[in-house]
Image 1: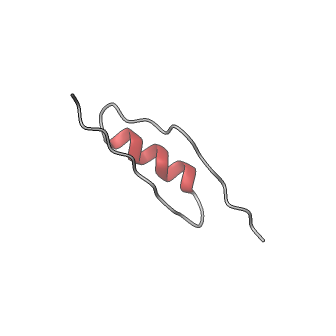
Image 2: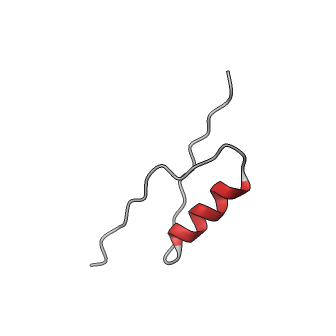
Image 3: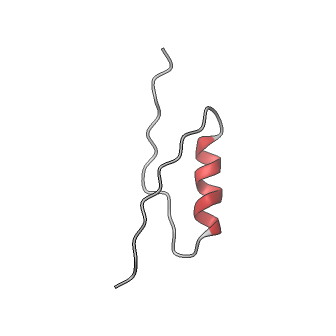
Length: 40
Protein backbone atom coordinates (compact mmCIF):
# COMPACT_ATOMS: atom_id res chain seq x y z
CA UNK A 1 0.00 0.00 0.00
CA UNK A 2 1.32 3.43 -0.93
CA UNK A 3 1.55 6.02 1.84
CA UNK A 4 -0.97 8.84 1.52
CA UNK A 5 -0.31 12.36 2.77
CA UNK A 6 -2.78 15.18 3.14
CA UNK A 7 -1.21 18.62 3.01
CA UNK A 8 -2.90 21.79 4.18
CA UNK A 9 -1.37 25.15 3.25
CA UNK A 10 -2.36 28.73 4.06
CA UNK A 11 -1.42 31.76 1.98
CA UNK A 12 -2.71 35.33 2.14
CA UNK A 13 -2.56 35.59 -1.66
CA UNK A 14 -1.68 33.43 -4.67
CA UNK A 15 -2.65 30.29 -2.74
CA UNK A 16 -4.13 28.48 -5.72
CA UNK A 17 -0.98 28.97 -7.77
CA UNK A 18 1.17 27.85 -4.83
CA UNK A 19 -0.93 24.69 -4.38
CA UNK A 20 -0.66 23.86 -8.09
CA UNK A 21 3.11 24.37 -7.95
CA UNK A 22 3.41 22.09 -4.91
CA UNK A 23 1.30 19.39 -6.58
CA UNK A 24 3.45 19.59 -9.71
CA UNK A 25 6.56 19.07 -7.56
CA UNK A 26 5.50 15.69 -6.14
CA UNK A 27 4.72 12.76 -8.46
CA UNK A 28 1.11 11.50 -8.45
CA UNK A 29 -0.09 14.60 -6.54
CA UNK A 30 -3.17 16.65 -7.25
CA UNK A 31 -5.11 19.59 -5.86
CA UNK A 32 -8.42 18.07 -4.76
CA UNK A 33 -10.15 21.06 -3.18
CA UNK A 34 -9.72 24.78 -2.71
CA UNK A 35 -11.55 26.57 0.11
CA UNK A 36 -11.51 30.34 0.18
CA UNK A 37 -11.82 32.13 3.51
CA UNK A 38 -14.21 35.03 3.76
CA UNK A 39 -12.55 38.42 3.73
CA UNK A 40 -14.45 40.24 6.50
